[in-house]
Image (tube, rainbow over all chains, first blue to last red; front, top):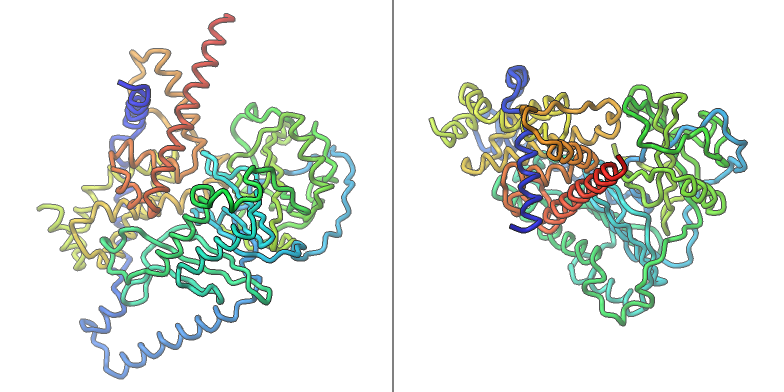
Length: 395
Length: 184
């Protein structure tokens, strides 16, 4: 028996022992009680085809209304501003609450929102789907820069890495996009739908591509692909979503198929953005703080004046915050402001927040005085991403 | 009555058949949800939500023989929805009671169990789901991909990364144990 077999057996035994043998009675009782008040959903087509006593006029009116709504939605979607979705939409990692005893801020509070300056155009950015929102995977710029973030086993992402393509390499990326047969000229959304236009239940967000346009601006192409889903639902074929999924796989595995000649520098170096979004957040932590060796109050906080004084609260997140948590606060800071803080945190041995899905660096600290978990996250602002904290946050 | 008949009846709106169907699957759903979410309260909610969604969306299930696979998909989605709030609830989560007799458990097994518990809790719910579906329910990788709605490669990657992380947790714990033993 191999070492892997031993481990698998240990894991399987542990899982079996952890599994409760039966559900509490209340679970089934409550579920059936809730189901009692629910009607079954049947497709529009099914209902229009018969069974429901609708008049012909009402059926026609219903179909017309559906078409009108679809046309309206399509119109709205085609009129999306160019920069919509230009920022990834991960959950902000819980970020840190400043200590009351912190050092005075050395950072002015006047970071103006703007698009991260870059003379190079965006070729494409891939955002992976996930239960908590979209997560950056790779950004390719036409000056050859390739910025990638790799997932870690905890579900977060590692800090972004930059490599560089040749002009031939950039052209190969464009060729891959052309090979899908899609134009990428307009924002579009490809979701699995049944004959009645209804989507099956799904959680989280699907992946998306942000594609730079020749005249500036960005088109956002989103899709959801359920593999083998047609075995479970009566869904329409998804050739576009399948093509996009295949493209996403290619974009996330560049090193596997690009020839050596496509790389000007295949050795990854840490991506150094000009600016970061600095997120500060705290929450009640009822477990032991022993796992968080660095005490928030003992860390020099050049960014922080005091509690609730840092940047701006992000409203959308604040509404969703758990009880006992302050709203996440955010401010755009320069690399010159952020890097010394990151270095100080690393030197102090701060625990990396491996759950963070931001492309950047995150640290979790303990505040024993307040019994709170405090984290600070420096999210790299990627090329052609909006340099502001007014980002859409995917809860 | 066999499951296929119950599914067909429930699909056509028979609430009694659906109740029988739900009763036949609730224990397995709940156990799976507990393992994925590591929290009884959240598992309660996810299991209930799965059953309610199953009733509501059953007419869209084309092949009654695929009921189990379809239900697993619903459960994983419900766990995702609960897991979406997990980060915010993380401080409130409690350790699960262990459903096994403690008598006769060796100290080594206890250490393994604790290390696995710690390692498992640090995985994302996506990764936990993949591990539970593969190693607890015994699903093949294509079935794991089907249940989680991701490409086969992603499913394989999740199981691989998660088991690697768990194995690392065990090995780190073993190293720590040896050090402690040597200095005692």
